[in-house]
Length: 173
Length: 160
Image 1 (tube, rainbow over the protein chains, first blue to last red):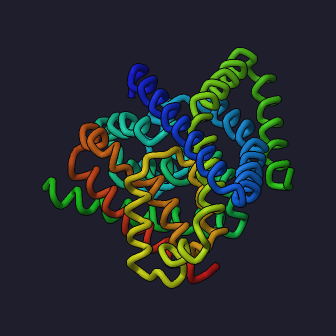
Image 2 (cartoon, each protein chain N blue to C red):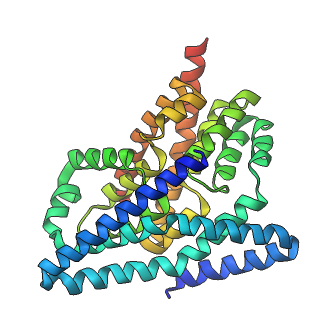
């Protein structure tokens, strides 16, 4: 996604926010009895968000600067075996940015001849189990939820990567 | 501030001190990136927080429980999985949203499925994924992610 597209997306976000604010004001004005519960709930979530979001954003910034993308491509492109899948998951948890940032990286890995399973594991970890993301999950959903989902996700991502690799191989032959 | 937030902030502070010691220039750049990303995400965060307030205030628990609660069954789970796959919101914001759903009567299974499909599957970004990785790999990845999201959710519902 380039800069112009991102600007357009930001504009859409702001318009959506304005619509939400207008709707909120309208609803709270029409139903005064709901005012207290809506405002305290929103305030509580706002406070919880503000107490961790700056830290999470700084961590993501640090990852972005100290773990550059080409370093990841280099390491993943050169590893083989089951180690490649595990490394794919591990490295996928580090970088920042939405999934569409990872596609070009995965494409570069594909061209470098990395294992399909490694690429799938990398993409899945990037999407689902990034470290800053896990912290927000911990804050809002608790330790048990976070750790259970983390372990299950790693387990099933490994299985999924191996299955997809088989599929792709059989179909290309 | 709860203990989770304290630990996260402490850890971040340590990383930041370490980063500044290692390379001042890079650390400053990281802070700049963080500030930019925060501002970029701010409208979405405020919007979701307002929506959470409205949802908990206006939609009765029974209604939410009927759609995504324990009794909604497999149909409810599949609906949640599709909603997660279609929605295109930053994953960081999905957690407070998920927490509010849980509070208002959604089942653990549907919340876990929602987070997993929301993060792993992108219908909106699928054309881009196909262009970069090819049709076969992109469709297989999204399809299998849908299945494992439901499996993960069902197991989580059973054990938690």
